[in-house]
Length: 111
Image 1 (tube, rainbow, N blue to C red):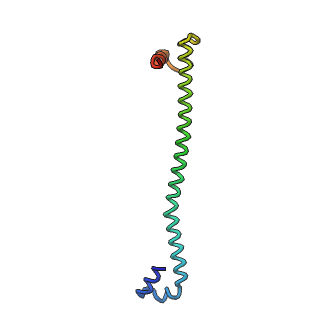
Image 2: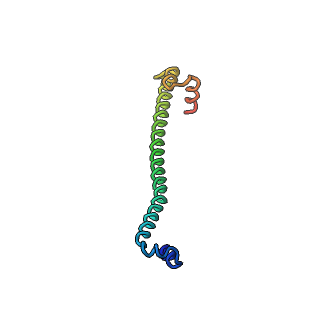
Image 3: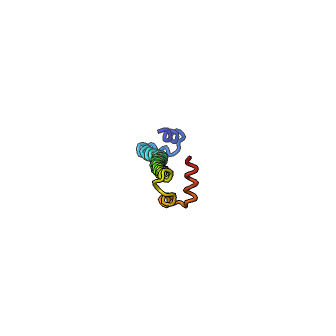
């Protein structure tokens, strides 16, 4: 281990290090390994959280897209039924949970 050699060469803790070099190496390796775990683990946690967030966002986006598509299809169907005389404007507005004036505006915009 480099640190042990430096200490030994500079006569720092020479006797202690000579007697317990293996023990000190083991301690230092354990500390180094633990430091590596602490440095790597936050990155793993961040990566997992990011992947989970992307997955949840994707799922929510799909759900919202499906919901919007269903609502648009429902509105198009109600407008078509009103235009061909199969459904009254009043009934269609109620089914769309809209005021008749708002429903008329949506019909005009759908031309």
